[in-house]
Length: 466
Ligand code: NDP
Image 1 (tube, rainbow, N blue to C red):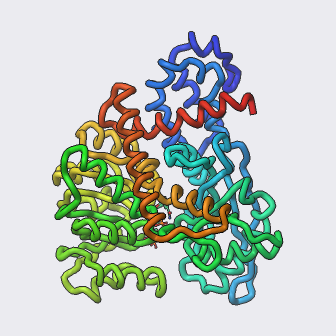
Image 2: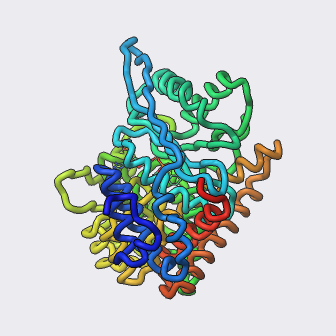
Image 3: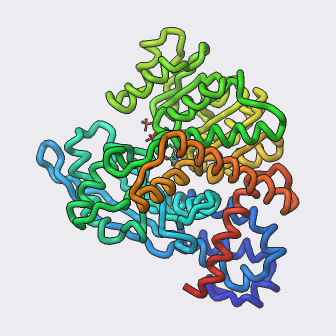
């Protein structure tokens, strides 16, 4: 039987339908291990759903949901400061628009490939569904590395990137945002070029500056939301974040605002990192030290090792690419907030965290835990908040930015923060209750995957074979 030729009746009698679709995904998308991993994680949860809902199988929802509606891949040529021509590759994956316009960030990082962006776009579909807002899923970016580039080089790159992307996006079609390597500076350059080419001032990107259509709390939203989610998980065990020792990885947007909200709620964040190494500050990172990190990373665009020169009790541990574990996850703490990148917690790291008595893992980054690490967290019944639920506050607040743009008004900081907080509580409740309903109480991975899937799958059924 060849891939893609199974009829619904055949699949019903032919062993494990999910394994067959998974095998097709691997065969059709070779050399994309992160995409396989993201699909596998969702499919593992959907076994429980397909037993109760054969209609999804009959309508081939799984085969359809793994296939992007559209993949754009394009050349991005630009001049560097020496007037030399540079060429990068640009992408936009328009994954699923069943419940709204495509929505998801742009990542600029040398590790970006088609497979990385497909995993991110796939995750985004279910995450956006969980937010309760009408947003489909997409993701894009480039293998361009903004690190070490001048502002003018970043601008010329962004202008070239948007010159192609602009014909595919729009406020009711596809609304990109930031991700790794794309912050306020890049969104500004991208928005400027879109406006110039299209002669339209519209909410085509989120994460905009406050003077030109941005929303208060959008920069803070992913980190704040992740901490709100952790607080909800702790509430189910009648605990709070007060006094908890916390590990945070990364030192970019998500990490910075995770630390800020942890401080607001009385916790003690102790670590940050970047791709060169880890900082551990046994005294804790307070507001003054956080302000230093923000200035170092957002203004001077420096390396995190400088922190240890400034604050003498802190220890810097350089990255050892030969090591089988990350020392950050071997520090004794109550809560962990991985906020750097995919697969930054492997099985050894997860075992180290568990050995040291970790109670909470709330994922700010996308898919930061390998499948083996996730399994260990679930088996040990810690409070484990998977990325597509725990970091959904960022895209949720992007949705709030879109709503404000459509209404041509701006809400106050308190109003946006209150809406974000309520959305995170609702996402947690949905995941918690869905996990119970499908017979796996406390398993928020199943709760998030199933909760996110059902709304998308039902919308696809309603809209026919498109
Ligand atoms: P930033 O670019 O602001 O920061 C990323 C941080 O992670 C930096 O400290 C960076 O270090 C580190 N990092 C990135 N790649 C690697 C790597 N391969 N190895 C080690 N460290 C790495 O990005 P964000 O904070 O926006 O994003 C962080 C994570 O959160 C990503 O997984 C992203 O997809 C996810 N996320 C972001 C959202 C947002 O609203 N921004 C929303 C939801 C999820 P260095 O500077 O050395 O590269």
